[in-house]
Image 1 (cartoon, rainbow over the protein chains, first blue to last red):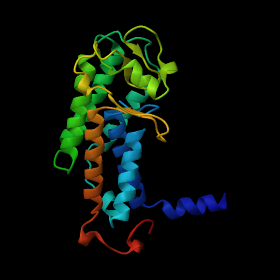
Image 2 (spheres, rainbow over the protein chains, first blue to last red):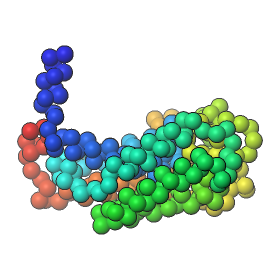
Image 3 (cartoon, rainbow over the protein chains, first blue to last red):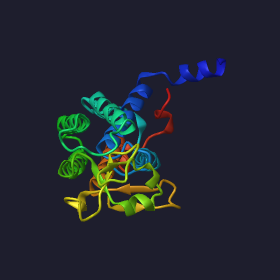
Length: 42
Length: 200
């Protein structure tokens, strides 16, 4: 638990969160435009 | 799933080419949260599908169309970014073939069998929905603009057995382009110490 808290504290900075947000948005764009499914295709 | 792998693969390749996550964080992607809403709508639609496509009058098809309108909006708002026009072209290609075929992406019974997902078809009727996809099962003869449908197959033993369309290819290439450009991959000015990267 203590290690988990340290990990969160280490990575909880605005740049990391912004990277995660951008990556999530890009993956959402790709999957929604193409394939949010179990095996790939649209 | 293959498209998520393409995005994450593009990030890894970008890092190997000297790109930076800091630069990716600076990507001025506008209205990004709208893409998340569109994705959420589709997750609902593919995991709670109607058994057989009931055509363009179906409320579910209306929701699917709405999700694509949101995607078009995000693409338009970010049209100045590299690769977005190609991603948008992929959206248009996929959306066009879906509209022309009753609101869902056509896939042939043969392609479905090749990736081993025949059991996921929710009916034996033409136009059967496939669970956890945007697909309907149609023969090639019954498919309008079949060349835009899910016609490329990567069967097992490929690690992620996949069926995909020309639109999907455009989206994957556009994403790769966008990620590489925004990370500054391959440009001398982008090269910097790993200490610049996350976390600080």
